[in-house]
Length: 383
Length: 112
Image 1 (spheres, chains in turn green, blue):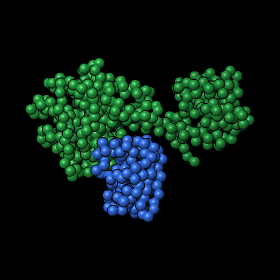
Image 2 (spheres, rainbow over the protein chains, first blue to last red):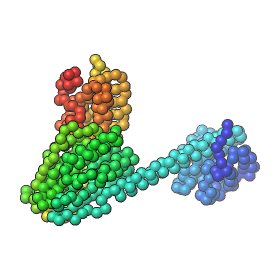
Image 3 (cartoon, rainbow over the protein chains, first blue to last red):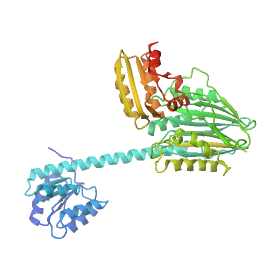
Image 4 (cartoon, helix red, strand yellow):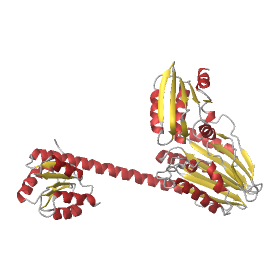
């Protein structure tokens, strides 16, 4: 049976007996790899660390340090821990073999050995090692690609928050390990109005990222001034329905009239916005009616729009469910209600500080348990 | 998450217990797909044991609903607890997939 070994692969042969080494060398000459030799344990460790062979054939009974000890040291050094080791020894009792295998060797051949058996086992282990490296390399490549996707997504977010007279803004955006689908955008509108979009593509990685990028592009290409929240969601839905399946995008679009201090909100599956009333020192969830998320099917009904008047000191918060679905080690989720307390904090007044209080509360709840979804928050405080 | 299914009188009943989230939804999706492999045009989800539903879980239910729509069939979710019902309503899905308070009223919805 042929093999795919190449001269770039190498096998280290370790034996204190020169005759054994020679026989082994001659046996493996046809295998197609470079052959390296070491006559003792110390030499083997030195060569293994420097030349990084793809396989080591290791004798056990050697004068200075024995093969078991060599194997132990190979496995404890990160540089050589993954190198497959095959013991080749006259010690043939079951306990010798078990000891060797438990030390991390991939195989154990007893001497005197059969040449074709050694060749066959060597080929098998070289193949396994090769496949293992391929898998690891592909995994690294995929992770790298996802990082690139994440980078692109970050670039799509607003570079900085606009300065709105009378309405101070702050935002928080944190991706989970994999490229996600959370997105927010802010747009200036005529007559001192501002549009705030927050959206969340269901799922992870490339599909969610693509949906997020599409939503960003669609929003910025809105053919009019996006001052009608319902119309904007209709438009986004119309275009996303063609491509989102089987995923979908929850979204919320709010238009703030800075002169009248009114917020009009259209919501498609996004968590309810939260409001803090400075006059009552209380925070509550706004009962903002909504429709199902974008990208599923056209809206036959009119999208309801909630309207709320904000007073001086009031806070308006929208966020993505990565926050409320943040779990702790006990499997409890942070939920929506818990947000109300840090939102109502009166220790600080600047929006970025309020966000810091909120995030600290979330992190304290979650403990060591990391987020498995993106978390985004957008907070505005009326002067 | 535990998911079981059975068919009786042409109605496929699928019961989901525990948490339906990003971790458990692939398995749920697989079982739902298998359950709907035949010609059935009636599916009832018994969610009385469902503790938690995330957007990934909603996606599983949505794909079942879409399949039933393709077959011009009927789907109903029943026995949602208060917590899950609220998740369902905030997400806007109640206008896509009918819900019922009990298995009996769910059966009525499907047989109409």
